[in-house]
Length: 389
Image (spheres, rainbow, N blue to C red):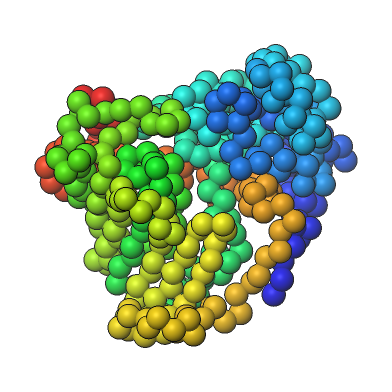
């Protein structure tokens, strides 16, 4: 089945909108949206500034970027009606129903989100969520306290192919009983601590999507072959919170005795195309690779040892094939549509800030387990980042 970018839920979403600034949608007027970006600090993720232009019931009233050149360039791409150097001025003047927070850097995510909460806006945030769990807890409490709906940019889980794979594996038993899952980061120049945060967050979200919340974690983190200490904390190439280590290995315990593994290792060869998740079952395995979009394949054998012959792998029967015109922006579209549909309803968005915090908890727990010298239970009781001493 082929799915294109115009398979929207726009009319249903608009009908669900009942509170706050979004009342105008019920009255037949488009939702007012704004974009917060910073060309000097992480820009706009993967074209997040363009996602509202894909929504038929939304108009982009403003885009804020402190960098003049970026403001002009990205404002034009977003089709923003007005441009601002100061995002706070934009929020005050435009009074948006929806906001996209685009910068990849987490250093200002807390202040962006709290400003949006004060403005009564719903929206979507580029991952990762924040610098640490202390900030994450504050953000989630603020959003929930106002009854606002926010999604996170876990765009791989939003793909129809991934959702179909989960149904086939978890609900229909395609590969029998799930025995374990194995995830890896991108293992490029960020291998180790930065990879754990920036790309690992997608992998952990997929683990939770297939298996639910983990119950414990054990981990080993080294730098140049030596166990890391809080003194090995360093700045990442982009500010995403504390990181350490060039070799990370972690094991998570899930319900029913299922375990999940994550690793990110610096090698001389660099990027190896291993970024993603392998789901291993009693009857076979499914692999999800994430470079250049989700590529999902099925191997029907309990041996988990496919030959080098390409025909050993197959697509999952009946799996949808998407044909996006603008893959980066369109991967955010189901998240935004779902946020709109959940406004005024008691439930959280399907991909919410709660999911973002849970993924961050799996990341921070790696350091807690390593520095603690053993297994730690989840959720973490200590919310301060272990690398901060």
